Length: 378
Image (cartoon, rainbow, N blue to C red):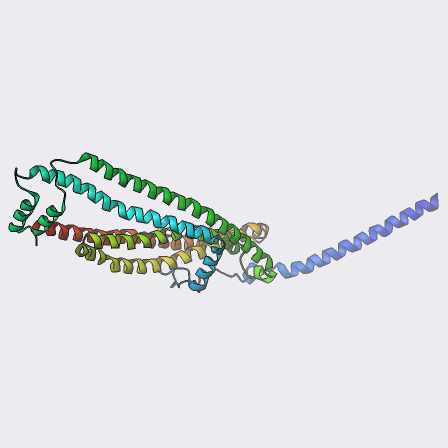
């Protein structure tokens, strides 16, 4: 019995000796690691964020540049829509019908105005004077345009309310159907875009899983997160808004241009004078805002990276007393994001006032010339 106790005590002593040896080795390794990491603050070489070329111009402190390889990127983006080609064609068809109805409706509304004008003018005809004689009297008075207008109208003794009601009902129905088609194309387009973005997110995740580890070691994780979230959301908004608006705007411009030349080619030419000026303004302002938006999202990724590093390494920041430095760095990147975002929104906000100013000039020109043509005759 005593021999067994002695044996147990011997085994316990050996276990304690082995544990002490392991603890000593761990302490030695920790000291060696501490000798490497525990350096003075003055010896730490910090890597400050330096904005790249895309970080803004007037608002980002450095000259900005346009996106690289826009053509191939746009081609790849359209390639994402290829599986939904049938839906895209259907959406374009709905947009075409909606635009055609919106363009033709004002022409029919003009016929309704002719009914009102013909009824008013018909009541003012002297008794026994025909429409042709009244038009000839206007020509002799030098009002040739007015005479041509009267001769082509259907003058009645008062307003034909039944015909007027029919024409207005047709116009209302056309606008109603056009808006139904517009709603339908928006609904279908949203479903298409959601499917495309779902595949895009899966592709991005698969791409991240294929990347080597050194890719993540050389880049800020916050910037990668920004690409996966913010950039994909930007693609979604671009497909939802720009695609439908681009098709609708192009078709509307062509349709309205044709209709204007049908009504009056002289006034149509006056209206078209504003198009080149509008194109120049949109090109200059749009190019500038594009660069600033690129700077905005680049600074967004940089700020996200700073936040992610601050929280993931919070213990190290507290241990080495780098709170003030991290706060200062955050303030710098936050200020850069503020400048880029303000610049992007400010410059892009100029587009609509500038375009409205040009359209108002065109409107004034059409009103003045059209009024003079109606009032003066030849």
